[in-house]
Image (cartoon, rainbow, N blue to C red; front, side, top):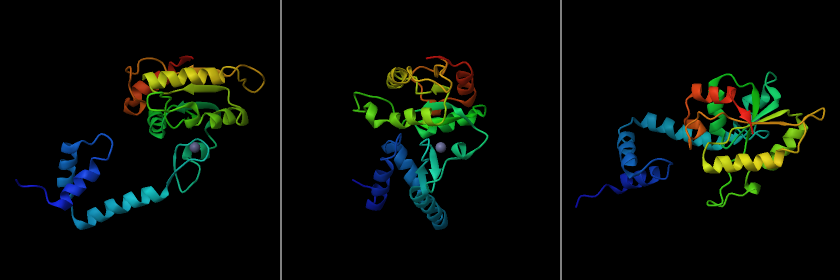
Length: 206
Ligand SMILES: [Zn+2]
């Protein structure tokens, strides 16, 4: 039986470690890659190395950033620090940002609560969230976790944790949730910008 050359088999095996890439897709990608010019392969390798070496979490919000610096949103004077949009992952913030209308800041939880996967409150950046709410004089927290069972459970947990907090001046902190209209179970980073924008505009009290 004709097998694959070991070098190619190894490349395919490495590619299957990527999320969403099964054996068939890995084979197609590998066969395409080995036809690239050496210079193109080198720039792919360089981009990969650079990303691993330089991409960091924003020290304030946890969004993707570079070289340990603040992300563009946290660094911008024009963004409203009194509104925080809480999302599961950095790519969710990128998705909301793509809508182009949100002018507050973000807070990345780093996942959603999941008893099945062993993700507990202390595994998420909740303590950092509570700290920011007090320190930055936050008046509204938009809970934009995914519309999945884990995302909903996380939203309810955050409500419990935040409901007693007050905004500057003693008013209750406003807690909102993205409007329905996002497909149930949908991940934010797959939603189209218009749908996401509308979900944000029509957000409801949590
Ligand atoms: Zn940031």
